[in-house]
Length: 335
Ligand code: ADE
Ligand code: ZN
Image (cartoon, rainbow, N blue to C red):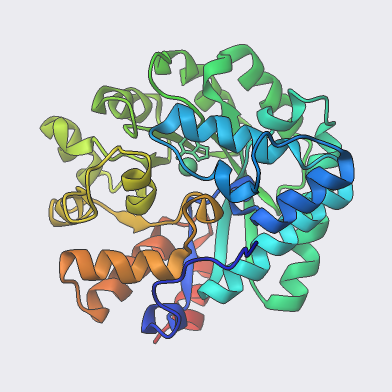
């Protein structure tokens, strides 16, 4: 078994380009070899011959089932420490220098894992990896949308006491079809009252109306937003207000949200004037990394290096850093 990612671009200038990522799930970075090792350590059946067999899906629900199985191998504090450390080690190899990364606690609490185990392990892993690899990471706690508002507010209650230097915001992920997004308006309001930024996965597998709902609720960023162009009046607002989109084209193709990278609306959204950023979502699950994403999107759209640097700069603009920090990051990453 190998856990080497299938890098399309080992020597690409896009690997050397220092990058910022705003849409990546820490659980989605779990290396297959680590999953296999930890499943064996805890005697947890994965239900497949090799962990790679988990990593193939026809749609988002199918993918989320595999995501849950991968999560099940992570049980104790050392496991979460390792998850975060390896996520950061792989980020460094992709040329990422600053990342705002999701944790999806619902997938762990459901199995009886304590929140503190997840948080303390991940924070320790990130701190150690930042020292070793120079990648700065900040965190976003994602609520599990299908569970509804009650459990989401319970996550917010936990979040209010966590280290604000590390935890920047509250997001929402998991399945989209059949989920009433309007119910989350009070979550967004309450999160803002507590000083958190907010973002939500929407317009991924579901319709653009879900993006409109979350924009009306006041979210600070839209995660995916693949269907945005279906609603012209919404495009006007998103462009006017420069509400960032964290686009993940390869993920969308892998989960059959878009037919091909060439047909993905990423370029058309940019052309419309939206503040679009480029992200990997779940790099281990799609066997690639952000450097590959840059290379593939450049090739699919005929974008030159300068255009890709401008796309990288969109992520600095959309990051949840203050203006002084953003200016420092711009200077640090200038090419
Ligand atoms: N959790 C991890 N990846 C996700 C995605 N692409 N959509 C929704 N939830 C997710
Ligand atoms: Zn995502």
